Length: 113
Length: 114
Image (cartoon, rainbow over all chains, first blue to last red; front, side):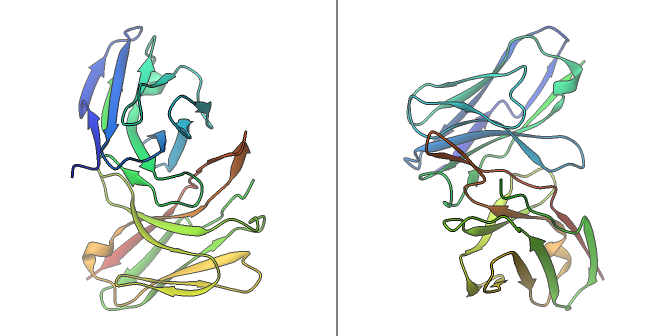
């Protein structure tokens, strides 16, 4: 039982490049989330998906797009990366959303030069 | 919006009890209070959750007064390995079409010294 799996673990991009961060969970959870964490800071919610087929904006959605491909997978796309998007990205899932326990992946360290 | 407020940092020594308080004045009736722990280079992990009064598990206790406007995470006899960032999270911070968004605050950096 792997929990929440994120790929890649590390990525370096040049300004303007695009990439997709992948996230998959094997716990049959309904809700999935993408957070970013800047050095020394707390987590900020980028997008979330309350259930398969739905997505919604969080606190900091600008510059990102998401796709809830199926119940297991929730991807985050940077269409034109900017240095301000240098951060650690965490994917999380929960059974239902709201008061349920969040399970986090191990994160993707992204640097945009 | 059930915003949470925690101390930015705390220091303690091995073997001491540590209490971290979180304020959440606008907590809604259906909200639970959840605490997470985060070590460097790792995602946060669940510690404890409660709705009212006191909850205890193998790693911590959570005290919630009757008005539920604050909560206190208690870590008994801390060790060096408890050095981490601790986040207080109130569920159902935002509603959109009936769904909840889970918002983290800045957290409390706990440093445990020998």
